[in-house]
Length: 183
Image (cartoon, rainbow, N blue to C red; front, side, top):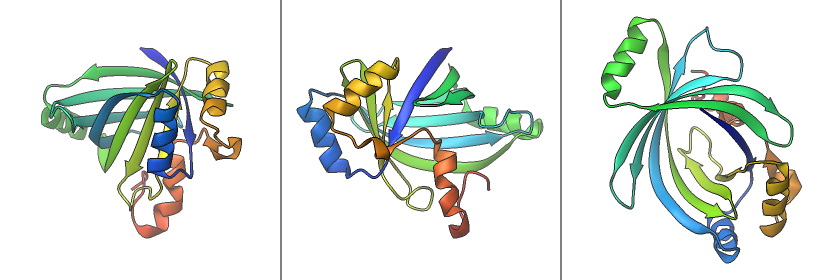
């Protein structure tokens, strides 16, 4: 279990933002393609969710499967979740179990992620499938508000670009187009 504290940076140009991270001393961590499967259950509290993530490292070819329960704590300057994760060896059996107990796996969405480490912060640059969420953004995961302020200043991020909304909340605009986290 770990406490996650993050904020999204909306409205970025991927190449330009990535160059700012590199110019500030960012160290490359990973380049991944992820399949995210949201598991729906009426028993989960509002804004908390269960997710199976299948990650393929595009640099090494390694693949991993992680089941994560994100328990929403709050969102003031940073979105805060308690995160409980475990590695999964057989995703099909897990999904069959969920189906048998009445949990729906209605959302399967793909994204690419480039990840960097910068002064103790993790910077992830994400791009979802066009119909899920069309705009690239960055996530900044930090230990506290002070580190967030440091990174925002270092990367010269406009505070109006910062959001504590989840991808589910951000993608609500795409409901009319036939693809959403609530399908």
